[in-house]
Image (cartoon, rainbow, N blue to C red; front, side, top):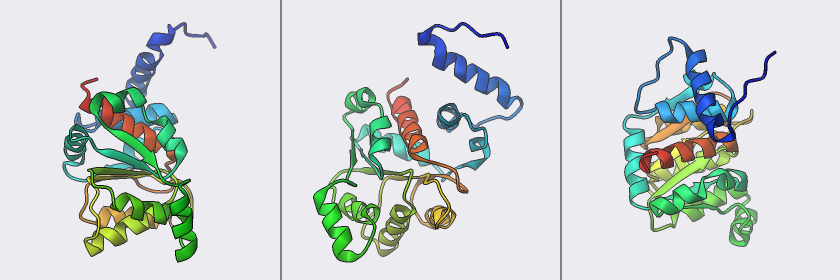
Length: 209
């Protein structure tokens, strides 16, 4: 197999060209294309062409929230680390993860819940537009659904892409039936890298990249 020489600065561009080529006749609507393409680029998994689901106007709503200095709340520090810091700063946004916070650990222990559940409760107290990105914990999505249904919390957008087997599919379906904008990876696939990729795609779109 012949190696392809690509300058470091051109690797991402070339990767996207390869993705376009391998998609062939499959067309992605322009409003969601940057997100789908970046997730495929991050995961090298073309299943996301079919798996990524978007509620009506989800991207438009997310971009508006970002321009209003939204807080990206993640359910893992890995996802938080993967979000582009320069893009956040440029747009006046921030990314946080509460999973290691002492008060979250204390609340989880007291209430007999996961830290992800407690982190959702902490996110609900933020006095800013929230984009919640779950790449690991279905319990975060389940708690989000509970708070949405009760009227206690309404994020601007939920990125629901936890990976795994226990309650993963069910929790995603719950979010897709709730009255809140979402980007969800149907099925068992997902992960912190996918969550970060979606956050970055939205930031780049909002920043005009």
